[in-house]
Amino acid sequence: MQADIGVYGLGTMGGALSLNLAEKGFRVAVSNREADWIAPFVAGAGPLAERIVPREGLEAFIAALTPPRVVLFMIPSGTPLDEMIAQVTPLLSPGDTIIDAGNADFNDTERRARALAEKSLHFVGLGISGGEEGARHGPSMMFGGSAESWDRLRPMAEAIAARYRGDPCVAHLGPGGAGHFVKTVHNGIEYADMQMIAEIYGLLRDGAGWEAGRIGALFSGWNAGPLRSFLIEVTAAVLKARDAGTGAPVVDAIRDRAAQKGTGRWTMIEALKLGQAPSTIAAAVDARVWSSQHAARTAVAGAIPAGARDVAIPASPALEEGLRAARILAHLQGFELLRAASGAFGWALDLPRIAEIWRAGCIIRSALLDELAEALRAVPEGAPLLLGPGLDVTLARTVPALRAVVGAGVAGGWPVPALAAALAWYDSMRQARGSANLIQAQRDFFGHHGFERIDAPGPHHGPWTAKD
Ligand SMILES: NC(=O)C1=CN([C@@H]2O[C@H](COP(=O)(O)OP(=O)(O)OC[C@H]3O[C@@H](n4cnc5c(N)ncnc54)[C@H](OP(=O)(O)O)[C@@H]3O)[C@@H](O)[C@H]2O)C=CC1
Ligand SMILES: O=C(CO)[C@H](O)[C@H](O)COP(=O)(O)O
Image 1 (cartoon, rainbow, N blue to C red):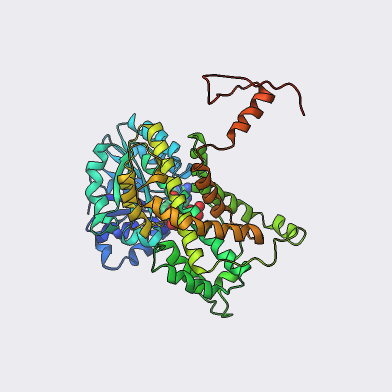
Image 2: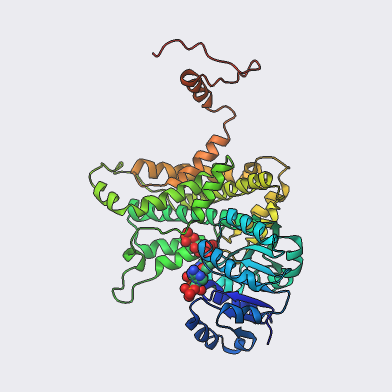
């Protein structure tokens, strides 16, 4: 049997995606670097095995594909992918397509697309979100590549994608690295959302003395309201889970060191290159770094005075509203970054469509994304996204709660870096006149850098004479 597509890499995501493709009627050739994974995978596929073509070795794998061939890699996307591309390219023919469905640095995707185009091969950078469950039953997918590749692969992509009220959660976002860039920013927002949720958990645990299960029950309640989302649902389930041996909350036994594979860091690197400052994502990346500095934290703990003792943590409605405000702000920062990238790289990213394809299947899926898609459609071209119709009203109503939550964290000495970063951005952006006039004066004083005046064309220098 010849296959419609080949999936290389039968790990968590590749295995699940292969089964999803087979379930939707596609014949899927599968292979894996460690070949002894292949037979157990097929054995576990049940009736879907009849549409799975297992192959050991690259040559046999490629020979199992119907031309023009489509080869999808679901492996770590740095050097491993470059090595696999080098091995597979001589086996392919002009017109064949390589898809990288892993998380990739979009600069690598751009480079690979250029190099493969010289060999008349198509390269697709496909951002996929949804974890194992999403890959198996319907992920959200961010397609980057040529229009020709999209036309060819669209039916397959739409067949396996998550659906939001019937609408497939996949879109062609642009050429080259556009899909991987959008996936990277998705993960940046994911980092911010996870961090802000963890900060609320920390306030309740350390500031209010709540036990994990009680916090989990609170999150469950929130999941029935405007905060409804996969990450709130996951948080509630995690907080309620108990260790089979001890009966204690599992979360209490987990080391407080957050790992990261790089997408949050990539988001920040690209943001800074584009002159953007998504402060909530930066705070989330910072917080993961601080969390990993466990030895230093342990040494410092107790040696430095704590915050005030008599600070009350705001009650549940304020926590819920504050988190809602911060979540909106984090998403808006992510979309501002996408808008900046779209302009800089000439991608014409369809921001409302991106919000729409994130409404189901992906890790940050939430009730907010539907509201956000509507607001992004309505916001005038070029206007700050903070003025997104509807969201502006919600922010005006919920930001006071965010102030109360951040205020309690600051006064009590419980860290709330991402929540505070959201608030700082909001307050900075609503200041028609900020304090950067002083920065300009300082720069001119020590570096003769010049400044603009509000009352006369420039540039100007100050009458600085002496250090006071
Ligand atoms: N897990 C998730 O929730 C998500 C992951 N991703 C991305 O999907 C990709 C795969 O992740 P995931 O399935 O979780 O990872 P796993 O660790 O479960 O699987 C990794 C796969 O990559 C293969 N692999 C590793 N190194 C090499 C190499 N040098 N050459 C060839 N094959 C190699 C492994 O083969 P072998 O068995 O031989 O080691 C295995 O098939 C990554 O890019 C990840 O960032 C994207 C979205 C969500
Ligand atoms: O892409 C994903 C979800 O969207 C992956 O789960 C990713 O691994 C998460 O990033 P990190 O490992 O850095 O927390």
